[in-house]
Image (cartoon, rainbow, N blue to C red; front, side, top):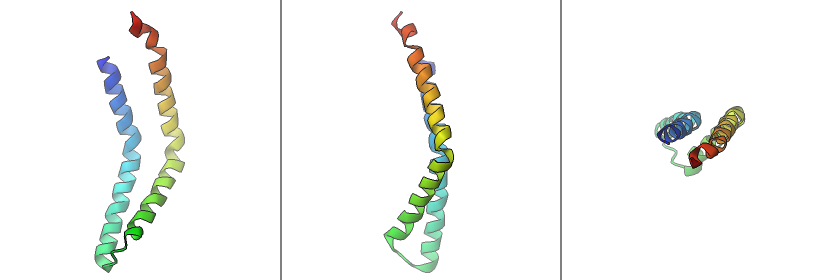
Length: 84
């Protein structure tokens, strides 16, 4: 059971990493832009992050979904072994 928990956490980490990394870089760039121009409009930081999120999901969504499906098949396939 310990191996399953470790696999789950690593899968969550690797799936979240590209999304969180892209959003972190976008937020940092928007913060620098807002500080330099002194434009404090909240939607100015929200819209680029939303566009980057959509782009990353469009680019890597199939890979993320495939990893989740593989993991679900592995977990569900191992249920009979947990009954013993």
